[in-house]
Image (cartoon, rainbow, N blue to C red; front, side, top):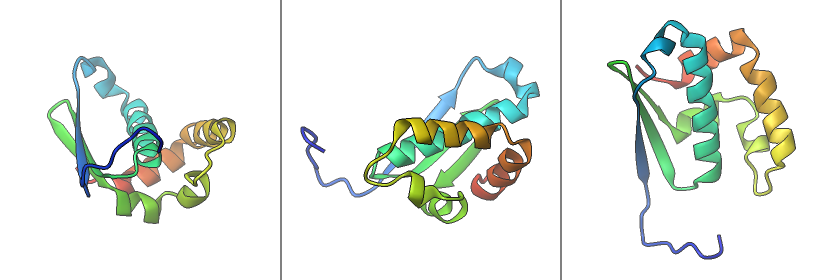
Length: 112
């Protein structure tokens, strides 16, 4: 990417703490959708992020790039060199509205 220098970092892990979302704890499907959206965006847009940990309501959910690449359907097709933002958003929105998909892929990808 133009303007971005590589300082030799080979692997980056992110820790994201969600604070003030205690009311959403009852809406676990919303949280799962949020986490899946975030990992998709972060791993698709930041090449050297290798793992992400979400801290939420006393729980930690961990995911790594390899898990997502292997288990998220069509990951490589969607997150290619040229991401079509409109197609990406439509695909993601369709998948996030499929409750069974959200439940299944969340349980496969995230380690609690």
